Length: 218
View (cartoon, rainbow, N blue to C red):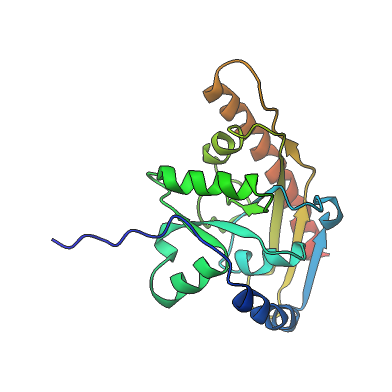
């Protein structure tokens, strides 16, 4: 019986690869889509220490999200995406693998190391692509992760919408909502705190999606 090769739970950015692709990326997207609108970008901290929690409705999402800031984003990515040439590239562009059903401690440690180093991290809280505009019940992993940090951290809900569909010449809108801040040192039940934070994020993300949808349609 063959054992499936485990996806890498760490990552790094190759500067020559990232910055070599940067101008191509910036030129290609405005040519492919008819309009890309980003609202709320000015609210992101300049030091890069934050989490983006976007709606995940298309495979285009992780390609478009780097437009929100001038420095590299790190991505927590489903382990099934790390096969072959694609896996080689995305790992060296800053993505690392997470098993959505059984997260490995090494993946979570790597995510914490990224945040402690002051780098922005993208986590899709729905856990995968959900093509409709209604937010499915969020996984609690994001809340459990960020509540382990000993410093306050802003988590930004990001609504993403494509009109009419994620396709050639579509209009795209990203709506960055107001941040939810973690409060380190809280006493009480950590599991309940994670559930409460997840519910707040769910409501904030749904609101951001509705705003993004209106923006894409206008």
